[in-house]
Length: 128
Image (tube, rainbow, N blue to C red; front, side, top):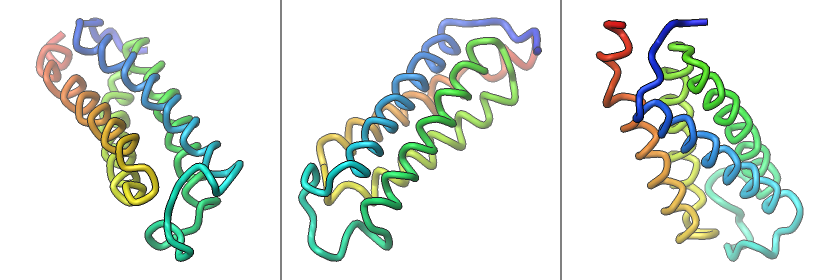
């Protein structure tokens, strides 16, 4: 375990990553369970069908929750992983906008907050 201090921004990022992970899992399960929750054309959503997108969202959600818990415990590797996962989540939500635009925009906003919170205090953690 790292001895990185738990600052307000890191705590905020960890909680937001847990929240974003839960939302991603809910989003993915909704796509896996029924195609009628989201309104799209017969072609599916950008390159893949609902099942693939559902699996992508569930996987990224689980990884984000794991990284969020690791950030909370002070693991510095988890901060970098959190940034990468938030970027992946935001990009996957861009492709999901035709299916559920408001929800996707909310999740992208949360992802941006996570990235900001993880990066804003990076120097403080590195110097500790």
